[in-house]
Image (cartoon, helix red, strand yellow):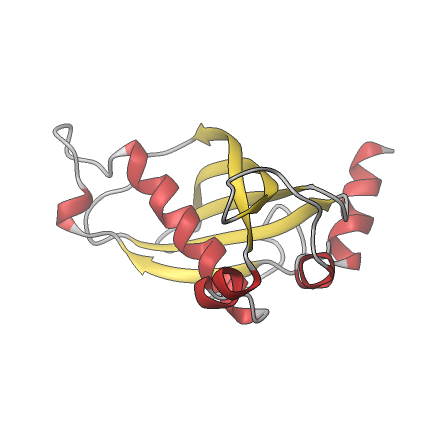
Length: 157
């Protein structure tokens, strides 16, 4: 796995590896667009688990994040047996209700960026399905890393 900072749009990515499967290929012979969203979701959940926020933890807490918007730029096609690196960053957390993640997917062979995406989330009460205030665990577990915040500030300047 490569955490080479020159490959990634933002510093300190959380990265998972995946080998594209023949079952993920569509009628055009490349990985179906909807599969990329599944890869992003897999990366999010592994990231969540790495900070102690597993499915079970969220169910026990009765709170979770619900995706409300995805913006995806598909840049290159991916094919069966491609080794891909899927990265994400928490790029916004208002510490109240909303959070955002950015994603980048790179094909390991040639280090080509295949996709860039951004997803917006709302903290949700898992029992009622309604938006709710973010618990303290989500404020700290999904905090924007200082290195990412500084990088984003430099981009805005």
